[in-house]
Image (cartoon, rainbow, N blue to C red):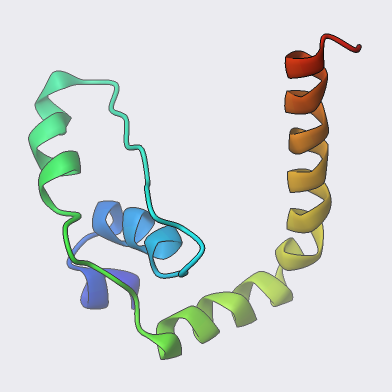
Length: 88
């Protein structure tokens, strides 16, 4: 369903975070130069529909992923704060 809406899984992967108003930028990377044109050329103006976002959320709930994300994000933020402040 993601490929059908976004055109490819690469575009869907970039479109997912961009579909939320809190996200303004997504930084893409590639491990091969040959992938750069594909990875960087498919993203502009792609946003996932609300129906697709709801379907993703339902799948995340089924797999128990949505419960884990808030704590993981908090842990990463704490780690960055420790690095910035020099407190370990």
